[in-house]
Image (cartoon, rainbow, N blue to C red; front, side, top):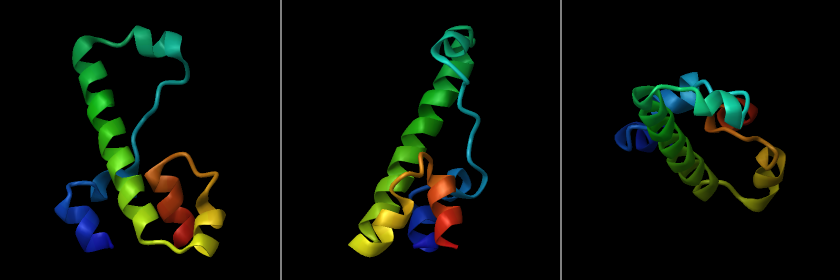
Length: 78
């Protein structure tokens, strides 16, 4: 799975995560370039979560169901 995440350019987001704004108000104060980076990070995180979910059986899925980020999912699986 790690190789597949790497091939999809998602492994960094899984290993290191990204900074999510604390609120919508904070997000609204970001510069346009920062908003684009945040959007790209969210997209990679969602892609990584989809890849991880596809490789799990139902019993394991229940363990990670409450995790909000791919980094949190990856940590719970290790």
